[in-house]
Every structure is written in structure tokens, then in C-alpha cells.
Image 1 (tube, rainbow, N blue to C red):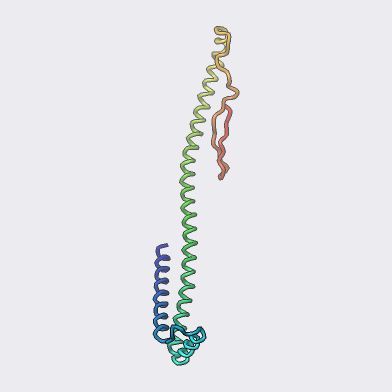
Image 2: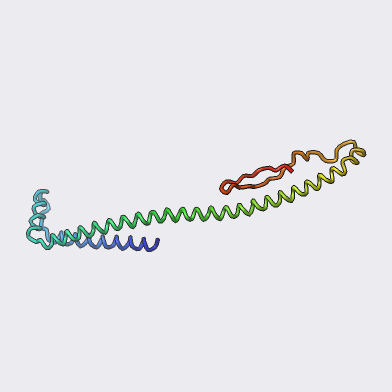
Length: 169
């Protein structure tokens, strides 16, 4: 990117030098009055071209060089613009990948905790199943209820979209 910007700066300076050289050659060699009509100015430039074909050829060469450099400048600017867009997309993609890695760590932790919680709930249910008959006899009510609706979160992915679902334990 820096190389392209340096090339653009070089092209701009070369164009400016050629434009100054052309202006100097034109001003010094065409004599016209301030009150000349447009037709008189055109005639003065034509006369100058006829009288000094070498100068005309040099001016034509400078004009052609400026045109060619401007084409190169436009190409470099377009190239720089495409590179900046690509660089921006690459940066966004890198940020996305980093964020996905962080999210993956959190998702794995959630799934790990959900598995541990599921195990603890099953162990508690086993205790409740063992204690419930005795608890009914002593207190005339259930020890623990609601085991049919207990769920834990689980993160799954199809590769692109992640989904958090509730798994009933």
C-alpha cells in the first residue's frame, strides 16, 4: 500500500512538473495582447505553431506525456482503492475469526457446565427417588418435584450458525 501511495505521489509530481514546463514554454513564446479577441488568440497560437514547429512538437509531446501519466495515476488510484477495500475486508474477517474463537471457548465452557449440571441433576434425582417414599411417610408431601421440566443450555453449530437449545435432563 505504501509503495502504491509513493508511486501516486511520484506520478502527481511528474505531472505537475510537465504542466509547469508546458505553461512556461507557452507563455514565453506566444505574444498576445490583453484585449485580443478569441479569434486573435487562436491565430496567434497557430502562427506560433507554424513559425516554430519544434516548440509545437515539444508541447505535443508534453501533452501526450501528461495524458499518459494521468492514465497511470488513475490506474494506481483505482488499484489503491481496491487494495484498501480488500484490506478492510481482510481486517473485518480477521476480527470475525478472533471473535468466533472467543465465542467457541465460551460455548465449550457452557456445554461443559451443562454436562456437569446434568450429571448433578441426575444424582439429585437418584437421591430424591431414594428419599421420596420415606419423606412421604414422615411429612406427607414430596421431597423434590419438577424433574420432568429441568433443562440445561447446550450450544450447537451446523458450521455457520450457532444455536442455543435447552436440553431436558
